[in-house]
Each structure stands twice: as C-alpha cells, then as structure tokens.
Image (cartoon, rainbow, N blue to C red; front, side, top):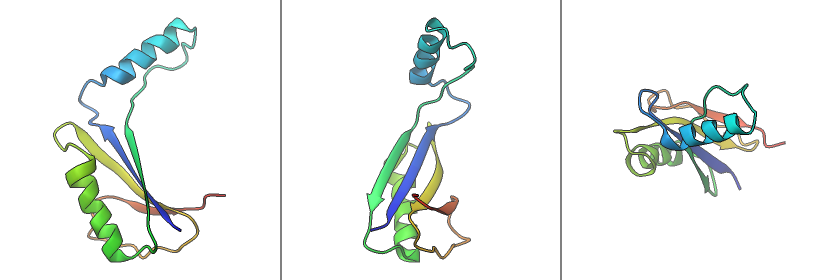
Length: 101
C-alpha cells in the first residue's frame, strides 16, 4: 500500500525553540560543525490507491489540519513507493514519488 508523506516545518523567519535547544545540546557535546537545527513534523498516510483526488485531499489536510499557516509551512508532500503519480500542476506543494528501496 502506498504511503503519502507530508512534511511541515516552522516558518524560516520564526524562532524554533526546540531546534535552538537541540543546537545548544549539540554544541555542549562538542558537535560544533552543526550551526543550526530546525525541528518539524512528519505525517505518514497509508492509502489504498494514489489518485489526483487523494493527493488534492491530502494537500487540503496538510494546509488546513496538519499545519498552522501562521507559524508553519508545508514543505513537501511525497508519495513513497514505486507507484507512478500523475502530477497536478494546480496543487500548492511539490509532489514527488520516492522509491523506498
């Protein structure tokens, strides 16, 4: 069964307190090569079939339910697996097919 992955990140212009805390911890552990950390959310939705209607519905869910548009951006919607996807140019986010292997 295909899995649709939605990734949500804090808006770049906003402070990410969780990311800042992790960056501080990395620094204290001597991992100074990392100059910043941002922490987001990942949603995985398993579906029977990937269709244009399903992708449009997931896009609506991503924008209306999975993210708070005031402080977060939906950065990607990806279809994992080998099922080919028909791309819809009208969707607001990028949709890609990724091979899980």
